[in-house]
Length: 282
Ligand code: SAH
Image 1 (cartoon, rainbow, N blue to C red):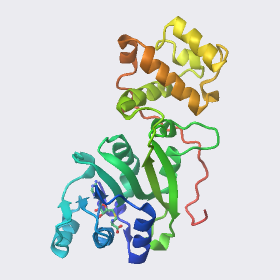
Image 2 (cartoon, helix red, strand yellow; image 1 turned 135 degrees about the horizontal axis):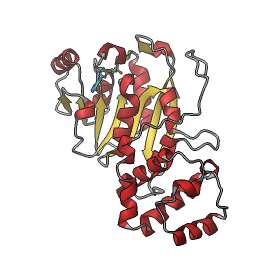
Image 3 (cartoon, helix red, strand yellow; image 1 turned 120 degrees about the vertical axis):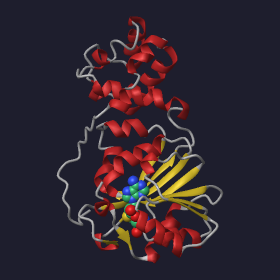
């Protein structure tokens, strides 16, 4: 990995303090900081009395930080966040390495020990997770049942050194108090959605052909008030949630096995957002 490419340092302490204020993190649980770098966020969090677990991959930055900050509220770990097992309840607050954004974000959103995620990230990958008109993107469907996703702040390139080419935002992924699908069913749900997107057919009932019995499919048709030839893309978010709940409740174990492993293997990226410019125009 080219670490240099993923290092865009913040330099304005007041801006960091403002972001911490906007996030309004719970003081009772630790803050996980990914890539503390030279420690600008770390120091501001410590000034605000947060307890921090900071994971830094770069050995030189790690050693410098270890020497410069001595604080019992900081646990500093020299490892790759993608290999790290998150073993206690945390909120995330971090200016993340941009080159691993999507992989990292999915790891965090899937993790039951993670509460809310506040990260500085590129705008384009954020859009993949968010709603685009009525179009249901794959990653939006994967995580929307569990999180409210918000753009909290939009940066100028000059807020970073070196200046990033892409547009950067401060985003919040806030766990829903009443998730549309229970967190314990997340793995099955991710597989179910990935299976549907993976099936080549455009028709809903061809996609779900093997997942439900004929009787169940008849009930689905009546409940959704749709015909046999309905397109998968004409379903609304609520319809998908209904389909999963039906699958979860009524499909037999053999049918549930059919979707197993599809999320892990998935390479789907149906991003409808186009025409990205690299300028500072929002
Ligand atoms: N938080 C600092 C630095 C941001 S740059 C600031 O805002 O100024 C991103 C940081 O992530 C760098 O310090 C980089 O070394 C670190 N990093 C890159 N890949 C990482 C990984 N896989 N795991 C942990 N840290 C990583």
